[in-house]
Length: 577
Image (cartoon, rainbow, N blue to C red; front, side):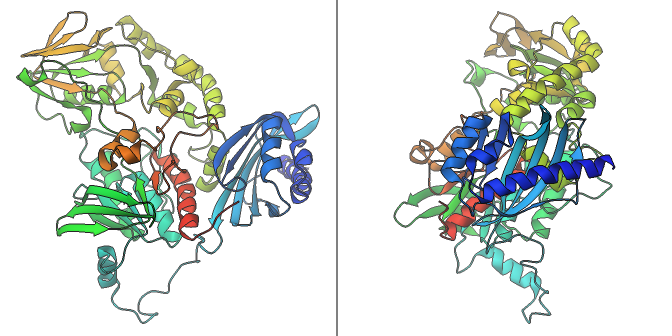
């Protein structure tokens, strides 16, 4: 008997026992099939929420509250990919099932404990809402000539105008989050309008500094429903991804208004409708959607401290979000305040433009190389020859965030060993490093703060070699007419000062756009909550018609579907128990 057959038989036997317990609504029997330190993550399938239940006691409580004989039916093992062994004592497999609301999928990791196979991690998700299916062919037309309709282009232009009808949903921002959730909503039959204040879809990337390249690899970075061509580079340049976003919006027939900015808003609680005033090139428009999604980026508002003396500074200064390209800075002095990703990237960009650059580092930064750090983060999942994207996504979603952080610790140490020469060279020039919150590295910083690290694509070696100067241990105190003064009294001359001082929480973007009355009802975005999910994103926010969407490409591809399912169910009048 081959290993693959053994893994399949092992998984099938365990799944048969779980199926019997679930269909009998036997919470105790189902819990007995799990490891003592099990993790069950449910994404709308059973609890109609996103949440993690850790340990048998928490899982039993969740099942006792929600499990009924029809919660999971038609449970089946997926054989297209897996089950498969991961080492000698772990089997990974996938399942499908039906729920009262629709169709679900799941990912399971079995672990051998005391001679019996039990589930260590189990994820159940609602994949499609009955009557609103995204499945291939569910909404496929035969084309305009075959259905006796008019010219496709004329109809598309008219449809995008929203003349004589109101959008069901308005999405603010046509970045990866806005495009992904709009694509899902559109396939579910929800009429969605995306507002983008820039001139073109993709300008959020296109207009950034010239040398910018994505840090995540191609296997993690596709948008939903449109995989990249096989020729796509591992790390994509920002102009290439910008053009892809524009193509995506066209190919998915997303309704996007560019050069469009919301100028005011109000919400009628009784009617359940927003009134949004939108400034467009054709004039002012008023739209009345039932739901609004803020998709302007999880980083939120630029954080620009009110440094004394800035108004009298005689050089150029701006926040890192305003940096477009190095230009010609030959023989001129530049100071970059902040030592995380943006600070390093901009310092390198300015150095390559001929500037004499000093990087100001107040505290410490987590450093990994792209060469060694990125493979450690993504492991065997999002790699060349790894699982197909739909299964890689299930495995990723099937790893709860606290477990992601715990598993990251070993990768942080392994990466540090491989990067030892680079890290030692940074230490030698006084650059201060850390291993991330509680040793969790980049993932710990990304989930808690959205920053605090640097993925080295060249700037670290420039710092180690003294080509980019380092001012460590003191933050910026004030601007002077010809530069800046640090908190310890040091002065730095500068023709340019770039404030790579990070971003405020996304809730502050909501406050600026929608006012205190809305923002005060919303949670902070990012940070892992008591239910082990990311605060605010992809789920109900406390406001009945306001939602957050954001995160890196891999996150928005996976979770935009879950957000769209909740909004679609709400608008269809489906009230999950």
